[in-house]
Length: 348
Ligand code: ATP
Ligand code: MG
Image 1 (cartoon, rainbow, N blue to C red):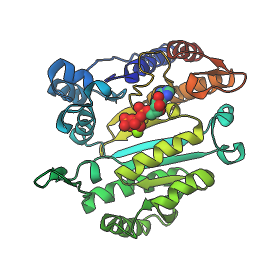
Image 2: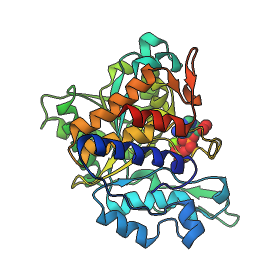
Image 3: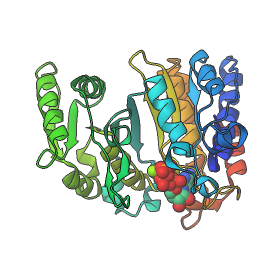
Image 4: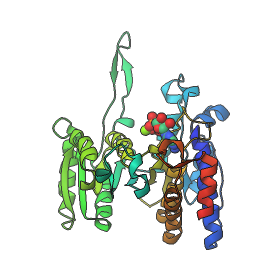
């Protein structure tokens, strides 16, 4: 689902790279395309058409570019492109959003952080994706003059348990350190979150657990990012912290993500949005989407070597000095989206 804006430009990169991986390793990937978001509204007046949902359910894995853009900004909220995104997450049960934040050495000087702080960062944000403020009801304007508003932050115990378990499992196969981020000094939902993390901690004695308030976590991500390994948090906190964390790596255009169901079905999308300010100008960095294809190979197909061939190609291209304009630094060669895709394909 290429979606809207730069989504359409970067999805081409992911499919081209997968075709190259197929040639190299002897696999054939079969692609089908469907509309979501603004493109789907234009075509069928529905941000998530039934045919799209059906096709996703019939597929082995799903790719999503990005949705939204100024063209649809004045639509009522239930008709906006972002509804399509929320609906597909909910409909497919994609509760676990994994966002690895890995600093590439050759991008150290693209990060606004001091190189010694940004160097060797390798953390994983585990964001709950189908609950919290994004889905709570009611969410509406109220009162005679509609001058009062309400959004609802709601979680069930089961929803928190499954995301926390997922995070512990990931911590076990990584560096056995888990940071749970909440706002338990203020929010009831966070107090239950903390309780559940402590309960689960007793089942994973090998994993070192720490609790952190979200405001402190925002600060520490910038001052001491290397202190983190797996970070687990609810939907809104995860959204905000991952855009922040992307800058450790130099650009939002570098961060891939995998959204998984309880059965391990996956949807893969870049952390960035449709970037309307650069859409259509052949300027978007396709690496977040291409690295999302690598996550797909790992999580949905268990093709480790193939996934590594993509990560390796991205690293080589960066080492060779190629940059999209979001990453430029002294001495680099600035290329457009299409050229960047071609160079990565050649390296694969
Ligand atoms: P969303 O609400 O969908 O998460 P957002 O508000 O986080 O979207 P983005 O669309 O991700 O916003 O864009 C934020 C900024 O990052 C913009 O200035 C955009 O140009 C830039 N950006 C996003 N993705 C890329 C990319 N792939 N390459 C270069 N710049 C990007
Ligand atoms: Mg965002």
